Length: 169
Image (cartoon, rainbow, N blue to C red):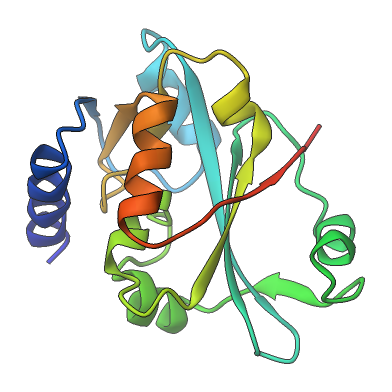
């Protein structure tokens, strides 16, 4: 299934004239497992968190630089959902909304959030930090795909997802 979704994503990127680079690697479930495979890439590697607020009213995808800390309490306050109200969403919600499972959360999966019900939080550093490319999983955790920051913003616009820029340390 993930290969079909990856092919659909790659077709969309091609039609949108978005050039990517891709590194194939064994399936990884954490940033720590992934990093040895990405030593030769130039740019920023991301970590992605799929969250819900406690009252289950909102779903959020957070993409941050892999070495930045994401404090869920602080983020919840900034987003106005109240401290302590952000939690990791379950895999069923991720599969339903983004068509990916555990270890595969990615901003690129927003292509499949057809009703734009997932709000997207983007680490400001990823698009303003002068990175050559930003790296995400392309619907599978056995590859990592790099896009130029401007192309990521264009992708988000074309999928109807206006990013909320936040700073993480």
